[in-house]
Image (cartoon, rainbow, N blue to C red; front, top):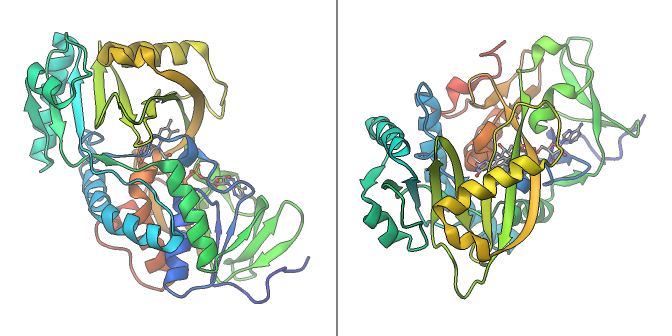
Length: 381
Ligand SMILES: Cc1cc2nc3c(=O)[nH]c(=O)nc-3n(C[C@H](O)[C@H](O)[C@H](O)COP(=O)(O)OP(=O)(O)OC[C@H]3O[C@@H](n4cnc5c(N)ncnc54)[C@H](O)[C@@H]3O)c2cc1C
């Protein structure tokens, strides 16, 4: 087996999803030689995602450290997006549009009021609104909604434009893209890792290896199972609808509680609307199921009835990299020169810039920022 590379790169990143590509681009910008191994870069969960950057909407009980990380990530987004657009010479459509959350019935309103109090206790901006205030902000809302809230700091980016721009920025900054599947890591006699074996039997040597394979991170060969953190696939159904950019149905994201279930509607500048998403524990099953599509559409149109007029363009599923505490794993493993960046679950797009900063710090021999430090790969082993 021989290396196709001229000399050994500082790092090989296995997995060119939103996490791996962001890390590769920033590492190359920092002057490192980087390769990304992925047969289909940008086509994992990041392609089907909604692109919400939602620290308030995603804040959950018992996840205070994760919420602090989400807040740091949201604050990092404007400069990350601006730098990326310049590097790629392309738009990612980062949109500081805020989010309105609405309740469909009285018990949804009670549930929403409870979580608002919790979110505000964490320092998040989450201001209650009456039903008419909601409709003033979002005229397309159903007349019967029972009230809601505004999350002024929950924004969005077009995730497909994002990964496309990341691939271009990687290319322009000299990242080598290797279009093949990684099959195993090669171990050194001292127990470290010195490169990656590919499905086509080539071997790529590397100064360090970063596993960023999303939910598949534990499928790489050559590593004892106890070294890698427990990530699992968590299925999500999601829909894309086409609207008229001249007369957009929505100007900001809507999150809706609909008789105890939740859904969201994310409007793009091109008039399209992303409606998501189910959260299902079904292993690696990616089948599109009629019942899930029906339930999502039905919930979303109860919040925004004008949805009925839009063209249904795409129904899709994706697999999020879930972790036992819903938080990512970013850091060195117990094997020398092997790091992981995975387990970003529902917020990998939001967390991509802070994760990439962390990976660059690790590769440079530094510590990750304190806000990322609680998310080491060994915390669930
Ligand atoms: C329905 C849905 C909606 C979502 N909405 C949002 C949202 O609004 N906001 C948000 O922040 N997040 C959202 N997410 C979550 C987000 O998409 C993920 O957290 C994020 O994509 C994880 O990034 P990743 O790079 O780890 O994984 P992925 O994006 O899945 O990328 C993994 C990559 O690894 C590659 N790979 C796998 N195995 C190998 C191998 N053996 N060799 C080489 N390459 C390999 C794959 O080809 C893929 O390109 C959503 C996810 C889903 C499914």
